[in-house]
Structure formats: structure tokens, C-alpha cells
Image 1: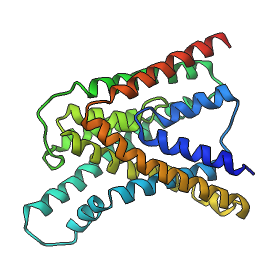
Image 2 (image 1 turned 120 degrees about the vertical axis):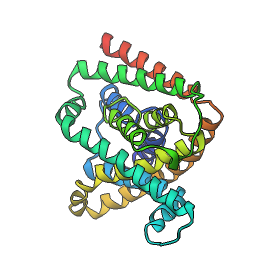
Image 3 (image 1 turned 60 degrees about the horizontal axis):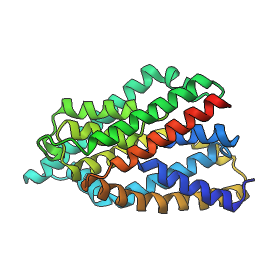
Image 4 (image 1 turned 30 degrees about the vertical axis):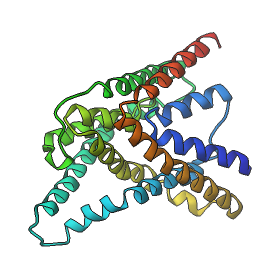
Length: 272
């Protein structure tokens, strides 16, 4: 049974790395390797992910209600049509991500094998790529459009960006934000689109593992709930922080961190 201090620390790490564009998977894999530390178990990981999921849902609850509600009204106001289209665009992006995961699942999952030194180097390379995406996102100045103005093809491209982030070391938020900016989304709506798109992604990653919670000892479950709550609070605060950094074109800060972490990790892997 893990202790409460470790629970809180892991909850904070989950909340920070899940939404900041620095790749939670990359940090987890390299962290486990260098610290010789393993996550307490699948059930604990599920609870942490559910904590960050609730953070997104609560932060963007108005957007979610508006999009879902638009499908249950016959109002002819263009605003409702725009919301319905955003819902459809999010679905298209999700389908593209899911389809690519289905075809490349084995290859992707093999990259999570921390016993392979080559995989560790690959994670470092992908972290560097995440840094590059963060850096160029500040430079993108294409015509800005609202989410409902996206074409289905552009929504598919954003879904492709999210699928790219299935690789350990590639940040999901960084990838979807960069791809979104590249297809023309304005900075405010690209953040909202990216976070809304994370909901089915996180939900899909946890649903198949939910039965594991049923066999979790009650004493452990209490600690897991603490971890989930900490991840929720941290994640909620991080969402607001990232949106501000994106709008102020300060994503390069995350680029520097990704590059530094990747270089230091590659050196340590080489000398060990």
C-alpha cells in the first residue's frame, strides 16, 4: 500500500504533465527508469486519469453543455448550428485518432517497454520533437478562424496530431495545439478544442481498465481517491495557466524544458 505522501506527489505530477505540453508519458517512462520506480498499479493510474478528466469536464462544462444541448433543440439560430458542427468536428478528430491507434497499437505499445535502451532514446527524441512543436506554435501567424469554421479535413489533421501523441514523449496538448494552429484556429479556440478533444481520449484510455477498481482494497482506494483529487486540483489550475501562456505566445518555455530534459536524459542513458 502506498503512503499518502507518495500519493499526493504522484497526483501533482499527473495533474502537471497531463495538460502541460511536456508529455506525461515521456516523463513517466524516463522517471521510472532513472529512479527505479514503478507506478503502484493500474487502478491507481485509472484514478489519476479520472481526476484530470474531471478537471477538463468542470473547467469546460459550459462548452460541453452547449455542444451537447445543441443536438436536442430545433432552434434555427446559427449559433446552435455552429455548436453542432463543433461537436461533429471533435468526433471526426477522435475517430481519426482511434483508427490510427487501432492500426499501430502494437508498435506504439512496444515503445513503452522501459527495458529497451533504444526505446529510451526514442522517447528522448520525441521529447525534443515536442519541444520543437511548442517553439513553433509561438511563431504561427496564419489567418485565425473559429472552431466551427474548420473543415472536416482540418479536423482530421488535428486528430492526426493527437494520434502522433500516442507515442511516448510526444505531448498530446502540445501536438493538438500546434496542429490546430497550423490549420488556422485562433489561439483561444485552439486551446478549448484541444482540451475538449482530450475528454474522449482520456475516457477511452481508462474505460477498459475500470473493472480493476472493483478488486482494489478499500484502504488503498481511499488513498487513490486522494491522489485523484490532487490530480484534479492541479490539472484544473494547469489548464488556466496553459491557456494564458498560449495566448501570450510563451509556449517556448515548455520547449526549453523538453529539450533540457531530453538532453540530460540521453546523456544519463548513455553513461549508465
